[in-house]
Length: 393
Image (cartoon, rainbow, N blue to C red; front, top):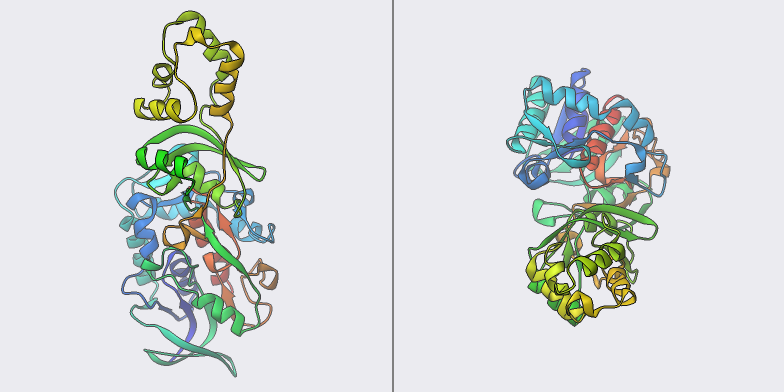
């Protein structure tokens, strides 16, 4: 079989690339080894797909080559994708920090992309793994369950290693290496931390499911102000997931549980106004009563406020606003939302996404060493990089 463009991977970046290339008159074959397109789209945002972010800018992305993402993001913006969503009548809403979610369900976004593909004649084939790829005289030759396929342009949109139950694999990295590309070390990103220190692990287990609103979590010079969530394995929630992308094994993280309060000042005010109130009762007004009780049990001796000196209340404030801990590790690719690292972007054109090692070979989306923050940024990178490659593939 002969076609103009083969896109491997029917996720967010692959779908965008396929529909855009076909819209400019290219014959496009979109292949995926899975039984369904866009599985990660369907599970994202709690099933409502946080499909972009109003405040997308290059600073929201991590890469060893930080300037690489600028060109694609400038040429296909969040407003371009929002226009498509609006044109298809998909209802959506903004949550905090510019995150856009479907009102109904994530399948609205996947359905929109599949409709666009169908309208422009993309040939989508699922359950179609590719076993091998080689250069041909005028492009690439693929062998797999669909037999032999030749194409002029080949786009690798296979994603990273995160959430293997959805079909993630290292196939894209394998192809990159085959054609001479360096692949930077990969690790799980946007991922919960695990805790093994017995006392803290016990506290996390007892508080499993408890969320603390508006915490400031910091690591290696990066800070994120969002919720945290205790789990039976450790810590999760948006602020933890964000900072995990900057954490390395052995690093400490710092958590300010109450960044909106001048805590020492507030505690001393309460001491004067309510001297007979117990510390754990007071903390129960800031956290859940269970969490307040456990904090008092593990960190402080709970007494009536009048029995504390200002210096002792200062120590309480310091512990709550500067809680330092060293995670044992992360939950790994099993629950990670993204993969850090990937195909070295210094060997890929930032304008076209084309390989500088092998003409006609393109890399888009998460297979590249570009990872966004939480909140729709990774999808915007998928749309932008897929669109950029499609202009040239």
